[in-house]
Length: 218
Image 1 (cartoon, rainbow, N blue to C red):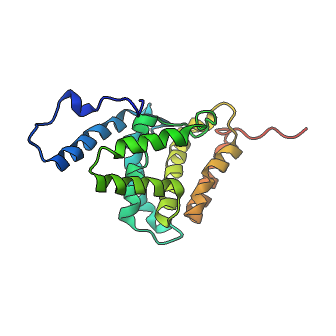
Image 2: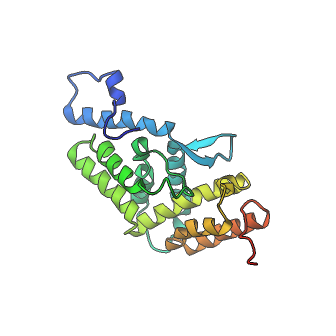
């Protein structure tokens, strides 16, 4: 969806005119982010024969933060980290999902997502818009322990789904097991134990033929 020209969902069934202005902005935002449920990702579900959507992904990350926080190498604020994972993909409502292994699609990703962040968070009252945009920037820049752990969950979650799918997006044409390791190495910035487990799954996936090995040098 184009972030510059869009029809808000609320316009199809406008809210009553006499609502408080601040509350109107908040409800408009909450209605608009319902679109997240329609943004399909590349990762297959473990429990059904279909791809997951961004809302399902964000919920799963929040659950992972809750369960796996003890594995963080640095102390993290649990609530703040959950905030980060819940809002990090909201920009994809307007920018779309960018597949991890699609280098061409990633060329303008930052520009698309920054414009989308301005649009989606701009629906909120100014104070909340600034707060959420600051959190989104924090996630992208990985400048705090919470952001690094949130990013680690964002990379670990599809790794688990691809393991359950016996390859999943690891089988993307042109992608090698070494590419998977390189893309997932960011997990190690937040948790050495989770990255050790992630590498173990990738290594075993490669051994089973779920991810391609590099061709031996002649």
